[in-house]
Image 1 (tube, rainbow, N blue to C red):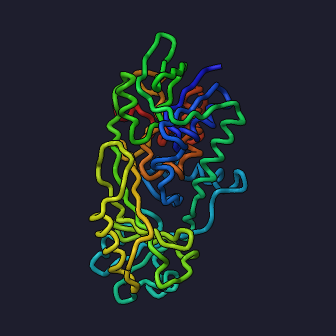
Image 2 (image 1 turned 60 degrees about the vertical axis):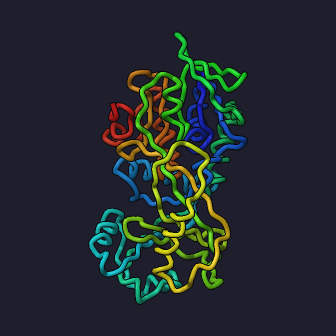
Length: 358
């Protein structure tokens, strides 16, 4: 049986490991003290099947059944709305066309989200099929499946070196060494760093900061049934969260890999854009944080064996799509590793494989 080491214990690493463990001896190495510490644990966690490039949408569609039914399902209804002023009509039209939203009246929009200002919200589009994802349950489900298949998750294992041997790889984490026939790079913001350690050509994956504020429910209202609502061109968004409201400036500032924190000025700008469209002022934040969304140059996931080093496997570049695509993305990685026919169309597979970036 092949020995596989997966570097990274976020949604990418855990889902890939769970798929690979049916046919291999798999160990996941996570640098932090817990899995899902960075991007996976800081996501707004929504699936909208029409979100992303064509290949991402293919993964979305292929993931919905698993997310809906496995282990009782991980989804709950949410809905997605885009709102705009008259002067943003062209951008609004582009958004609703690209995401397949239906045009609705501003009166209907204000009924769904009672704090919207009818004097400022002139245009609205809506899609009912967007759904929340229970990220923690999904992560734990993949981890449980991995362990049931005999795999192992080891935390507090920050990779210090990766050495290519004639018969595989040796990964060193401090004083500990892990040997593998196949190495899976699911290191998120650190994916290109791991590639350089291994002597593999990087893919140009760059982490981008996404900031988030959690504010009290506006006017003390019950926000649990509100949709997530966006400004045009995803200039900001707001999403209900456990009785409060998450507001993000939807920032994507390129940064070095690190334990991210929110930028105060960027948060203030996002909150101002949100507040400009509602009737209730923002008087305080309950908390704030940031995560890193890591993109390849074409903003599409990088999945499969490296074209120059087939035993080095990429599962990276998830951007903002990693959680919603994880069931299908991890299956595709396993199919490509073990030489099985992929379950999604050939054009999408080609758009996801590392070869496209070389």
